[in-house]
Length: 326
Image 1 (cartoon, rainbow, N blue to C red):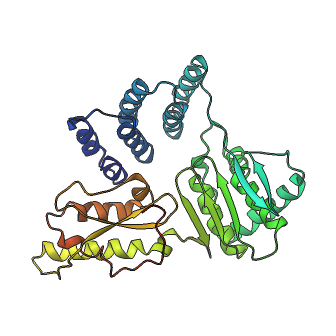
Image 2: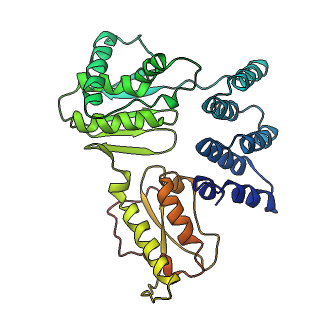
Image 3: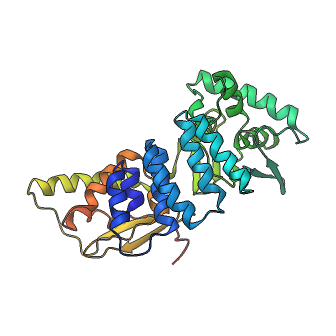
């Protein structure tokens, strides 16, 4: 619930929920709040959440990096430098980003700005050609995802050499046309790379499956097909319309088993029975796939005093997917 409120921009409510809990505040609660602060640029609240996180786990470099990124996004470079100095003093290192792609039963690994691959010259040539085509198709590099105090031109160059872009360029020149590309990254895919891959899937006519630190992404025909695959946007919109009708006093057909769709980390579907009263069985993997628009809508639905509003989460939305975990 903290994650959901945070994604919807209701960070003060999320903080109140954390502080009012009678249970021990763990890393998951403060981490969810800190992540929401990154999305909505709430620096003071981020500092509070980070302080609590570091009291619980002072040796986790991820917490320092996240706070540093929040400062960088706000242009507070002196604070970024302080965080980096603190990490150095405590002998903590940021986990480097790696992307892997398998071609002909061989694993190829790339890092940002990598020139160690045997096909490096061909990879960068393909990447240059690809970016030209993508920009003609409407792709605009989002330099907000470069968290360094450098000029715009250098930021674009840094974006173009992200490890997932290099892996995809290699995949395009080393596999037959139409072959799906499957890549894995140990960190979360940034927003610019997400947009880049959507354009590539359209221009190159490839299915591109990316497994990052959070979830699977299926890119095809210019879209990340996670939502298209599961049809969740339509389900949430339907639920929200029912909720709006309920507010107007109109009757909605009851369903015997209201259910909530939960997303596992393998993007498999599991239907979970809802309790008759909150809290509902939400998890971070489920929340992580929602756009802000649909997060707002889902939050409104789940705050409804009646279960009728979420009756649309019923088996009348069949999904031909096998659950990862029973």
